[in-house]
Image 1 (tube, chains in turn green, cyan):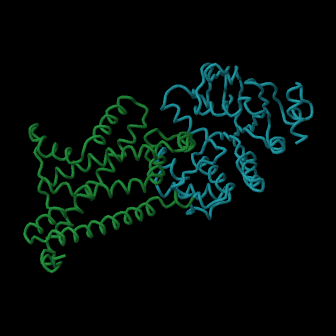
Image 2: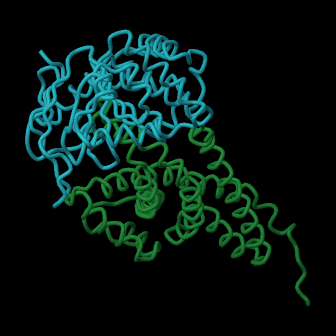
Length: 223
Length: 244
C-alpha cells in the first residue's frame, strides 16, 4: 500500500466541520419537532374513524413512504417554485424532513394509539371529558410512551437522511466532507472523520431521545 | 322522584337481544346490587345508565336528563353519575393526585389549587392521602381501586355505578375496597353495583335486582331475596352461591 494517511491535512478544516454539525443539528431539531407534531396529527386522523380525515392522510403516508427522500427534496426545492413557493435550501430541507418524518411517524403513532386499552377511553368518558379532551389528556402520552423507541429510531434515520440535503447546497456535515476532500484530495480522511462524527451524533441523539422519553413518560414506565 | 329511571330498555348485539325490556327506578340514596349469572345483562345494563352502551329502545333519565339526547347532554349527565370499573382504569402517566384532579380541572374548569385541595380531600376519604404523588403503577390493586373511587367522587356525582369493582382484586385486597363502598353507602351516596360479593350485597344493599336472560327476574330487599326467593332460577342462583 503506497497511500500515506495524513489526518493532519484535514485538521485545519475543523471550524467548517463544527459548522456542518451545527447545520445538521438545526435540520434535525426543526425537522424532528415539527415532524413529530405532524405524526401526532396524522395518527389522530388515521384513528379518528372519519373517512374524510383518514383518506387524505392515508394517501399522504403512502405517497411519502413509497417515493425516495431525495426526490421529495428535489420536488420541494426545484419543483415548487413553479407554483410560486420558493424556499431557500435550509427551509426546503426542513420541510422535506418534516414531510418525511410526518409520514413514517404517522404510522408509528397510529400503532401506539390503537394499542390504547378501551377502558382508558371509557374512564375518561365516564368523567365527562369530551373526545378531544380524552385524546389530549388521557390517550396521547401513554401511546407515545409505547412507541417512543420506534419513533426515536425514525428520528435517527431522518437525521442521517439529512446528508442528502448536501445535494441542494445545504452546508451540513456531508457537504463539508465533500468540500474538504475536493480541496485536500484527502477523501479517505475526510469521509472517515465525518463517518465517525455521524456515528457519534446518531448514538448521542438516540440516547438523548430515550432519556427524554424516560423523563416525559415517568409514570407509564413505573408500571 | 327517582334519581335514575329506566323504562323498557331493549338492547341487542346484532341478532342477540341482551336486554329485553328493563324497567327500574332508583331513588336518591338507594343502594342497589344487580346480581345474576354471567351473560344475564347486568354489566350491559349498568353501562347503559351513563351512555357507555347504546340501546335500541326505551329511555333512561338521570336527575331529569335523558341519556341519549346529545353528546353535550351526555357529558353533563356523566358528571352526575360516576363509574368505577373492574380494571380500575387509572391513567398510568399521571400521578395519583393528577388522576383525581384531571376531570375537575378539564371538565369543570376548577382552578389548580382548588382541584388539588379537592383531590387531597377525596384521597384522604379513601384512606390514601399520603399517596398523592405516587404513580398508579406503584400501588396495589386495592389501592388503585380506591384511587378510582376518589377520582369519581371528585366530580361530586349524585350516584356511582360500580361494575364488578372487586373482581380483579386478590382476595386479601377485596375488603379494603368494600370498606370504602360501605362508608359511601352509610353517607347516603346512591350506589348501583354489579357484584358477586353476595355477603356484602346482603349487608349493605337496600334492594337486590336479580337478572336472568336479559330481564329483571326478581327483586326485593336482601333478606327476602336470600331467605324467600320466589322463582326457581333465583333459588338455584342463591343455592350455587351458598354451596360455593
